[in-house]
Length: 225
Length: 366
Image (cartoon, rainbow over all chains, first blue to last red; front, top):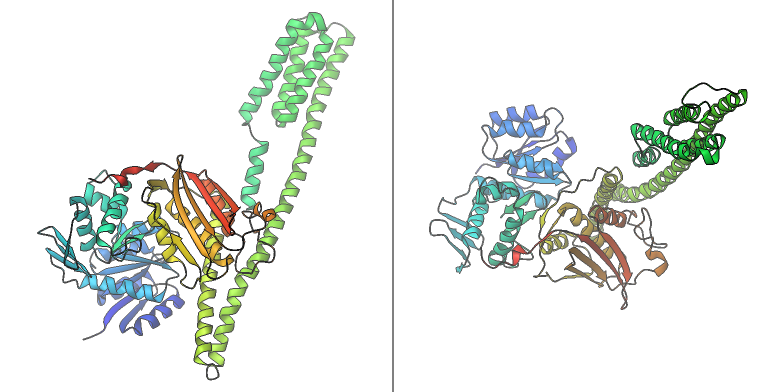
């Protein structure tokens, strides 16, 4: 089997070098672009399995590159950003980014995110059934089982879980989840979201205080793994 | 920091807009005139001149030169028109009165100009003091910074040199140790930069609260999970099931908890127990972080939250910014920070801030 290909679009040579070594030593094939323009051309000629995009590029803002890529590229794009910039991250996610990492990031975290984003590309989950670790979600029958035990979820809990699970490995912003579950106009009702995520965790997580499925991305949203 | 300082100064000397200054000066002169007009038969019109002068002096103490000069001019004209016989004309009959009027005019103007000169001098002295304070602050900052940044940088460069040049001579254990040191130094540098950024956000007044509903139990759990794995204390947190959702800036409160925990980890001996408790008390979210370490001398407690303050004889590793950021962020939420020594030993930090609460999470049904 040929190696999975990843395209890095970042203007910092040091970061590119670091990513190159990290990824190649983990059996990925790496392509690099130092500008957004070069990145788009490279991606068009040779669509990679995943793109790592620095959101703070000098020539075109990373946001524009992201929008341009998303007009035709539908595999995972992970955004690299600086810390304390939630607004930037939320807007990138709303523009179609799959996930994000803030610099400085740890290699283990990077590799985990890449694996999960690539798994998302190749997901074998069907429209009707999602399997994720110890969880099995039968969408048609509206039944969730954890290690073969049937979980009692309310309708809203079930809907949120399905939404998150269908977007496995992807960060969903608060606004997106609220709109999908409660409809347009409820984007500010974050208190409902907090409550249902809380009750959902109590039911699906082995230890709700150290969740393994629903991760909180502070100030941004939730990620299901 | 400079910006904040000068901005503050401007606000102080220009408490009133120019328009308001004119309005207040003229009103004061008019009020005094009216009062004098009705009592002039008892006090005599020459005393009126002195009373008007007092008014102008008061105005001069408060306001800028133009409103003061117009008050002086207006009061002179009023005195002439309403008080110097023959009244209701600008005509002055006796030579004595004419001289008095001219003197009045002169004294009022000199009074105005002198008072303003004094005020400018005072402002200059204040500015100079402020500048000196800022320079002092910068020096403290630079000293603290160059030390706190250079130590981890030296570690990184030194460790890398060793790894590159002495590769054959280094045992595997030592190689791993050097790599660990590089890791610690990098994390430390990142924390310093983060603290500096946070501090500058606070100092420049760029901080805007991003209020949203937060699950405090979850927040505390996630802060604990994000701590560096290498700490050797035990952290105890029992989620409080009766806690409502609170509306606050999650990012800032997260930073507050992180700084308090880092503090507890850095300044308590190994195997200490750090306890976090979150409660809802009379409309406020109250979170305490206490430890069973050595505590802090009572005399030092008051200075703990000051910028760049570090306890005498403490180990290096902090910038003296962590706790002042805690204070700044909690104050931005209109709250207070408290620190006290536990009766059983160790120290307890308490942050308390008013926050809208929602008990929605206690509803059992949808």
